[in-house]
Image (cartoon, rainbow, N blue to C red; front, side):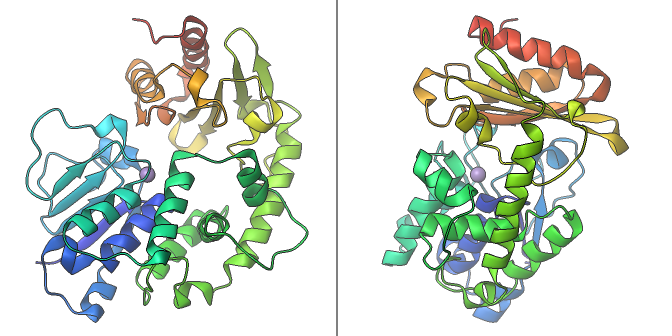
Length: 341
Ligand SMILES: [Mn+2]
């Protein structure tokens, strides 16, 4: 069988999921491949909407991670997004659980299949769970998203942020190349200690990213607004005079601690589409009652696109000319506290 890993591209959990499958390949999949054979397995990073729009052609040796599955049967599928929650019994080698990260869930599956975990693997699991479910404290955000005085020691959470910075530059082609290259290099125990990866100096990418976050925050400050009635921060990038830096997706909650939600809108000119990101205040998840995954699905359906995600965060891609209507619909849902019909 010709194997291929298809994972969530430009996403730290997608990256770590592919890494984890490679690390536990034979245990997890019941195969007998050599280290070299596993290393060579190609990794493709794609976006969930690429699958929903039928842009990805699957084959029987595909291992699909942190993404929706397709009606065509693949070799292995594992996900944790609410949108893909199965409604019927799953076929063999298909796994779904409402876990904090797909990587953490894969590690659990490997343990159930007989793998033994090192101390580092446990630390890694804890960090990726925080990273992907945004279970950060304010201090974690300060440590990972803001410039600091010295960069000598890094916590596992900071290390994952640094690795993520390597494939979150403003050049998409470079991001894909780095993503693929890192995952077909010699892999260590976890990404936290992989030699091949740390040779490429993630700190350099991280420092540049922190600078880019700062530039972005300064610019977004000129048009970020707060809708008190909807308790929602609105970031409409159509109002930006310049386009600079890299988005810090947690800034809204640092700037408006009273907010329960955040919505951002960006127009993708080439495709005549609008991309919406919706989230709940990561520091006050208790007061955020609207199911964002359902809201994003509904927004996708109503405004000519698709959407989905988790309970607390999600996204949708819709027709560009429906953007204003969509924002109105979202704010209305937050005001009412439900999606409505
Ligand atoms: Mn994930």
